[in-house]
Image (cartoon, rainbow, N blue to C red):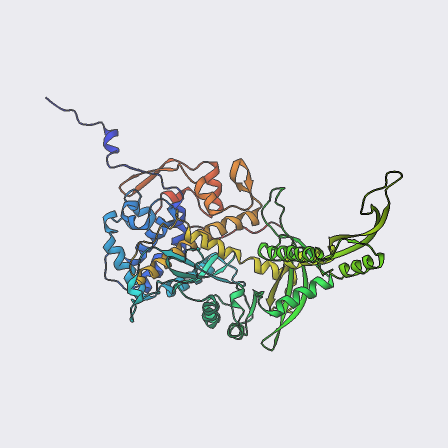
Length: 575
């Protein structure tokens, strides 16, 4: 029996593969703009056929996919167009656990910090980042293993995995620390992992000792940038180390100068209104915080610094509870003392004396007002058979305890205050007013949102490595993934700001604050057919995903060209 050969149309389809990559080709285009693979390969010496740069880019894209754990990198790539994402047509089996482990070892030997520093400088140049306000912070990452190799007299190379102050509120687990130096609302330009018991005060001191050399790579000398950090920065060694650079930090409440500055501001009442600084809309039942400021100075370690006292209508809950307890304690104390004073008197003079004694119980938070009233009561003994019962006059002490409204209001105002410490000048070159100082400090939240990214189980999953050195290298991979994610978001926001074009947001609304996650949910359903090295779009991007691609400096070519890079030329703001 003769079997007919398949039609020519079917032959043409032999070997065809269909891919739906989502946002990963866009992330790969940003990796290529940074020169990620080349930077790593130039720093990491390896004789492996699989280069360390390609391994890192694969792990970065797997991290940003949020779909599979990093220890299943081979399975992740088996379902992807590897040449499109990594620039090389490699088999998925090349990304075995052994090859990945060897690459991480080579990265650790070369220095993960060196790689991140160079990539940070490349990001600044390629995307024209504003590095004038670098923000620094640290966080902890909890691990489930024992990591006993870190407890020996000669611990294994890499960060020491041990117990420390857990910012995850898991003191039962060992941990390592991650530090980041970020610009423009969270784009990391420097970062590394640290020992699990590293102190924020000490890590601040170490970063301050090298901040000048780091910022010099971005073309900024001393005095040309403002270092922003939380209250852990305020110690004598750190204040000495930060010179001659400018800084903004928060003065810890355990300094007497902090309490003095706040009381000075509250007593003066000469607040300068700032208003609302929130960039996001809030619900009616949760109005955004309103701010006001007061300028003063404080003396720390025999040196005078600028102190900007900020009052927020969103009171500090911890301090508010402290003052609520103080008010309740005052009420209880006065009530207990009043119970020891008799209520009734036979002599008016005695009653008035007790009233004076009761009013002396008044305190700062409460006033006691006492009055004496007379009343007729029946005399003791058998009443007469005829006529009214004989009476006598007695005097009753009536006490009323009321809050000292002015003092209680002052306490509640104290609860909403904090002090920003700075050496930024008030006038002249590089000057900042109170509003600018507050905005500069509030930019610190960008670093905190980065930590949420680094800990998101959908992004990172549980750390699976056993050796501290490989955890250090993995930490570098996660920071690079964060860098790509933030650069994508930053590009979209710059496009919106400069063109005035809003992007599709949630619930069929437009937004002027697009996020990378918002983009990742929009750029879906784009189907690509591959036969050999040729690719064609089976389903082109629709209007919604195309809006995000354009905002990132991309077009549909990103889904078919393995060498395609994002366009970093941002349109000029009209007018």
